[in-house]
Length: 227
Image (cartoon, rainbow, N blue to C red; front, side, top):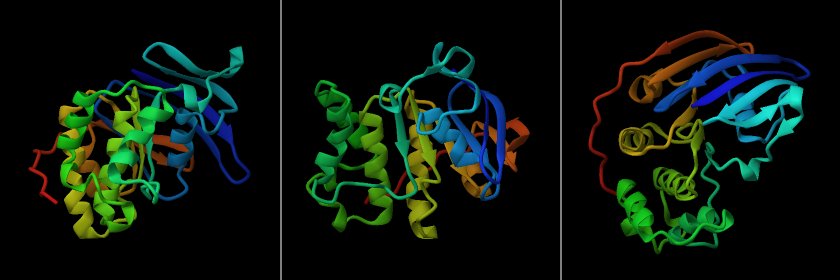
C-alpha cells in the first residue's frame, strides 16, 4: 500500500495532499497546474516534500520529521513520462533491457517473454525507436519500466502526446496491465475518458489540494489491436 501525507510550497503554489492507494490504478486528475506531476515526482523521490511522510508497503520513503529521504534510484519505482524517452541508438530489445541492467537485476527470460507478450512487442524487438509510432514507443517505455521489477509504476500523462488514434491503440494495453499485472499504478491525467476507462480510484486536485476522492467502476477490457 502507498501512503502519502505531504506538503510542499513553490513560488506560485502550495501543495497539501493526503491519500492512500491499495493497488490497481489510482488516477490523479485535475487541470494543468493542479499539482499532479509534483506529487508523483515527490513519490518518485525526484522532489523532496517540505513536510510529511511517504511510505510504500511499510517502508518509509520520506519522513521529514525523522530526516528520512530514500534517493530515487533506491525506491524501485517505475516511471513512464509523456514522451517515451527511449534511447535512439538502442533497439527495442536494448531499451527493454535497460531498466533491468541499471538496477543490477539478473536476466529473467520468463519475465521478458511475459511482458513482451503482454504488450505485443515481439515483432518490434529489432527496430530502433525512430521506426516506431508514438503508441509503439509508449508500449516499449511501459515494458522497460515493468522489466525493472518496480514496486509501483508512476505514469505522467503517458497518452498526452498521442493523437486520438494512437490513444485508442494503447488504452487497451493499459487496461490489460491493470488486470493482469500485480504492479500498482499512479496515473496522472486530465482526460475524463482515460480515467473512466482505467482508474480504480480517483483523486481530484485543484490548486494543489485534494477536492475529491472516490472509487471507480472498472471498464470492460477490450482486446488490443495488433501492431
